[in-house]
Amino acid sequence: MSDLKSKTVTASAPAKVILFGEHFVVYGQPAIVLAIDKRASATAQMRKDTRISIDSGDLGVAGIFKGERYQAKKGGIKGRVKLEPVRSVILQVLERAEKKKGIDVHIQSDIPVSAGLGSSAAVATSTVLAVSTLLGMELPKPEIFRIAYESERLVHGTPSGIDPAISTYGGALQFQRDKDFVNLNIEANIPLVVGNTEVQRSTGELVARVRQMNDKFPSIMRLMVVTSARIASEGVEALRTGNLQTVGTLMNINHALLCAIDVSHESLERLVHTARKSGAYGAKLTGGGGGGCMIALAEEKKLGKVMAAIQKAGGTAFQARKTDEGLRLER
Ligand code: PMV
Image (cartoon, rainbow, N blue to C red; front, top):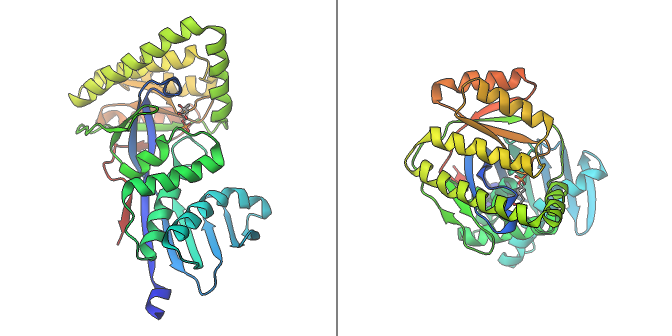
């Protein structure tokens, strides 16, 4: 018994970037999403009482939930909202286990937060795996996805499910509303630089802005939606054959379409253009836009130069590659 009390389980899950199709996915077209080699991890341990304690180094927030009561340890009372999604997945796992136990969860992450890189989903899925394993359960991946998705729904309203799916399964996924996501089994190495403008934005507001555009110019929007679908399907073809130059050109076209629906931002334009000028095959905003992150695809040997150019233009940047490793237990 004392053994179980001191036992810890750690699980980790990857971040993501959207390669093609953001925003247009809301109108039923495919989005192509890649898991990248930045990860978040959750370490779970039993408590002697029935409280839930969560500590997130990256958010600078820690606290203890006793029923509905919250006691802040770090980050003040306002930190509670940041920890609610993690608490929600822990409660869902405890409910499935039919156990009334106290759990400590410690979160660590390499993934920039609030940047559209899927950090909260990576935290949610790794927490589900760590806590369920600690409780002796073997939850299948679709079940882990569902729990993380449910917690996202509580927090964000109507999320598309892209983030919990990619953090659970890894690799490259094609995602389309009301359809099962498809694992694309892309073998090519996809060398990327991710540039973060550090400009805060709300994905919900940008989705609403696009909705207004759609209401005002429905027939133009329809053509752009169809174009986005074509870009995604030609993009998948180019990824399958490993033709990165074509992938890059299609990223540029996709970015132009995202500018047309007014979700780019001057900070993104700066980074996208500097990346192209420094030799990238292509560059585009990724995710909601309006700030947040962009991605550049480049030959392996040019990655350093592209990254330096993005940094010089005012962004924070890191190199990333597709990873096929989704959610996993750490030994
Ligand atoms: O900013 P992110 O990574 O959460 O991406 C949002 C993607 C959108 O297509 C803009 C919205 C959605 O729910 O799919």
